[in-house]
Image (cartoon, rainbow, N blue to C red):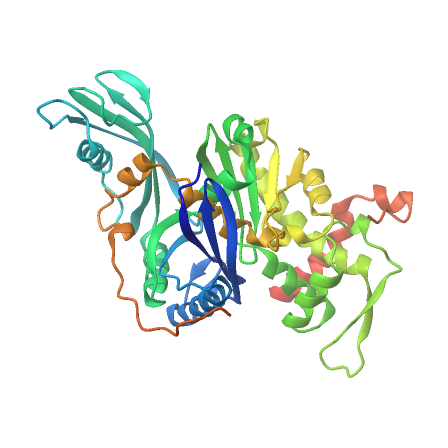
Length: 435
């Protein structure tokens, strides 16, 4: 059950920055404000220009403030899984209190003991997640506080990331005049929202197709076990369309959103639309099927690389199948295409909150849900991180105060034609262009 209060999720993506304000009352989440702004200063999920990123964050926050009729101070932000490392950790201490009753201080001390390790200078600890506590040999304890014991142990999972990725994200949020309440790795929060309890328990592959990159994560036994990041996302699809159709990036993006299909077998060769071509006064007519073949060529390439990485670690043997979300999954036919490539059961996750029923809002919503449902023992453990962002107080600058205010295949031969042969020409054209 979620804790009562106001929560703000900040999703800093490559394509857009989304801010969602929600109120939790008796475990029920009610969205009261949303802000969305086109991203600037980010590339492939990572901050590359702090000033531009700060300006975009502030615009998105102001939009959410106006709609929610509140001023935003604290946020829970997501961080991409780029070069994320997952490793087990454990610590052990003697209970300090004379009565031998375990308290908050003992939990912090055993968590601090688990954090003692040598890290490369370019990496930093992102978070620590307790798995179980052991009191005098009795294991499987989720919250040892109030128990009597002499020896306390903790087993958990440690997530580390490149120091520059963490620092730049923190810097952007602080300079935007916000206090960073939690910094959560994106697949961790997304898995808890998009997957059912059974899917998290028995094991499921969660795929997030964003604008800047595509991420596959393995959730098993309610834990994040593996992540794979492909630096090709929705922007690459748009670039392919721009190159093949000889049109501007903005025009290609609009064409993709309005007429795009992920599976060319579902597109019609008889449905045409105009495209503004560079160097020509009159628009050129293109059919949906040709556009779908461009999109499918790139998506097939992304899925094939993911398929190889996931099969290498045995992730596709898990019974939960594959769950997809993210802005790119709004393309019709993407579930069928993924099913063909992965040869596995695939389903799509779309948030069911009113006004946010689009997969691009899943990440921001998951950050709110994660923060609201974080247990007290988890918060105590995470507060032990040295230099933790949860302990930082940011001087909030003066800001403006806001007041209320299915198509089927056309022929049998077309449906049976091998995909790799159908896209060979398009792939070769795109490859030659970028060489």
